[in-house]
Image 1 (cartoon, rainbow, N blue to C red):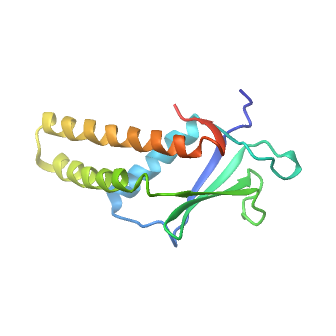
Image 2: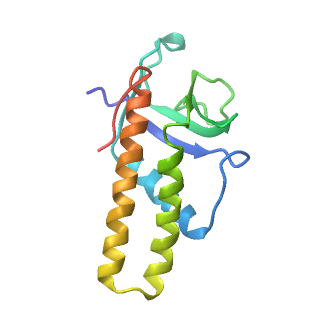
Amino acid sequence: MNPDHRICHIELDEKSIIRRNADIDHERRVAIFDLLEANSYEPLEELPDGYGGPFRVMLRMEDNRLAMDIFSDQDIYQDRKLSIIILPLTSLRKTIKEYFQICDSYFSAIKSASPRQIETIDMARRGLHDEGSEILQERLGGKVRMDFP
């Protein structure tokens, strides 16, 4: 595995990505941190100047689709896009909705529920997370070679 084939920075577009609440924002930050710690990411299309990584990725919504703007690790001002990957969210919509509902239940439960109830909700949350991850990897299959442990 080429150590440059990885995402080194992820940013969420503040104008198009909905902020839900402090708990969800914290979960997002933790998920991004974990993803950046160990990942393999290689766009399958030929990039300008044969660039092979590492990559900065901006995630944003565009016409109800997920857009991944890909930049070199040196392009901190994001003024020279290497590529854009756009994915319809139709196949993820139900999973995303259920995930946010279970997260709301989880954050309510940690305030008053028993440890066993919290564990049950957390297992369901992780299951939906894994389901969404699998769908996303499948949708990106012809566009990006990746491995997110």
